[in-house]
Image 1 (cartoon, rainbow, N blue to C red):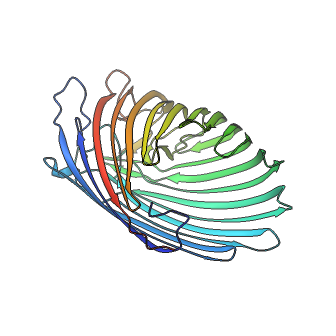
Image 2 (cartoon, helix red, strand yellow):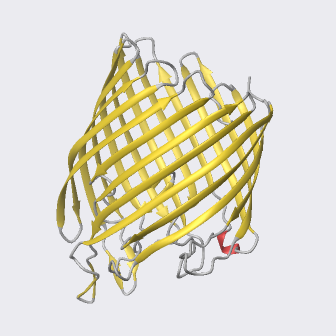
Image 3 (cartoon, rainbow, N blue to C red):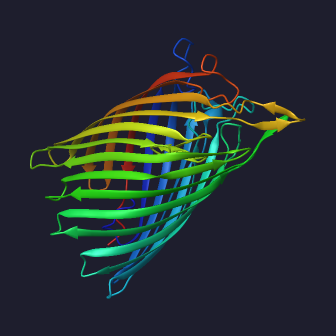
Length: 410
């Protein structure tokens, strides 16, 4: 609400949430869990100022998370950012954006096994874009983005990284209903070296080049069918080098008829392009692994409008990641780990049911229940084998929040 594009000028919002978790420490199902409750207080600030076709936006959010029993889980996530958009009468546009956020790093357990502190990560992004179009039928877009991730407590299997991504895209539409785009995406980066006494895991350099073709049909507002295909190659280099083919496909449907129920569905399969030493995002949760991986996922969300003030949302997400990783750190002339690729697998199943009540123009209340389960092997321990390195936990969360935003914009 605080970042609503309709508001002009400054806006502020306060939010208070209460969370109860059945398994906040992410212990295995066969071990006794320690349920806990948390209070989450957040402040949102935003500013939007248009000048004709130009626009400046800035936003920030600061939260404080406090658990009743597990003080090591307490943290203060934040995010700040800004975006400046320029547009000329000749269909030439440009934008510059900056974003920085710190959040808890989601892993098999939330506590660092060495420091007994919650893992944190800081992600900073800087990007720019230039777009040129003719008669609004087609346009040429060039953009670049620099990403840097720094964990506050780096581990062998949680290193930071730095990468640069560039895109050149041609896009257009037919009769304002069929949209298409062809994109060349080039990415290169370095996964940082990490101390792992008595050895050091060396830095990993990676590079990939991918062609993306997208097609979307939007017959009415709120309704769309989108398809994507990708192909390319990637290279990873540390002690040695390896090359992998990159392929991807996805389909997404948005269906919002005149009835109160709307549907959103998404399925995808990507091979080789997540993760060349970089991160795979699961709704903002960063998972960093060495080696190429394949990702398959499906999402389904149903939204039911019960009048103007009540909304019910039902969703489910399934994700499966598979890959190979090799560890070739050296200490005193001895190898740590193995140069032979080790297979790993990770499955995530997330279900949620929520209800939202617009109590007043400035007050929004919502409650949700979410269940997560995760299992796999070889995904958490670089020294482990499929038989000794397992990942398995489940958690159930209840979350209620009240958000108050006075109307300050115009």
